[in-house]
Image (cartoon, rainbow over all chains, first blue to last red; front, side, top):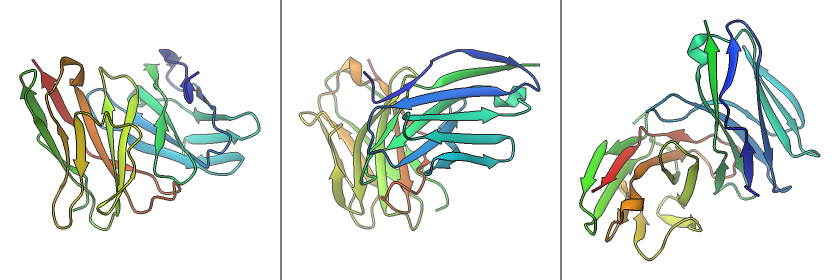
Length: 111
Length: 115
């Protein structure tokens, strides 16, 4: 079992729809959770981070964390073609000096 | 600087040669992380530093890989006796703290091609 699991996709949604990206992790001691977006051939850029159970909203993005279920998700509202990218879930284990990344979910937003 | 600067952007080496990659973290960031991404697959954590001190090197293939962060110099990742399987994009990231509650900021990566 991988430490951070994501569905590789591709996930395809029409423009204007809600895209839902999911991630599960195995270490119950994980403390902080990050979503990065990576365009092809580019470096990852931070979209959202969350530490506490519940929802955190930032513009069109909402991160959801459920530590009991070891589950973190990212919702993208009003999806745009420019949102088409690979979304990486990253989990910081205790101490924070090691971050484990999932394999990423490829998202396609169709115009 | 305001960005993580990685050099070179692309490095080509013959199998068995040495490869050395460099990373200058964002000014004021004390923590540096190296990752390996093979063929757009998941990031493999290699090593993390606080200033010049190694904190976690559990991802490093120690027999051929080494890394340093020395004062007043870019950090470096060196691969001795490169193998074809070392071909990947190597990303460096930096953060203000290592508690895990600060996001990491990534450089543009160095694409290493072993022929």
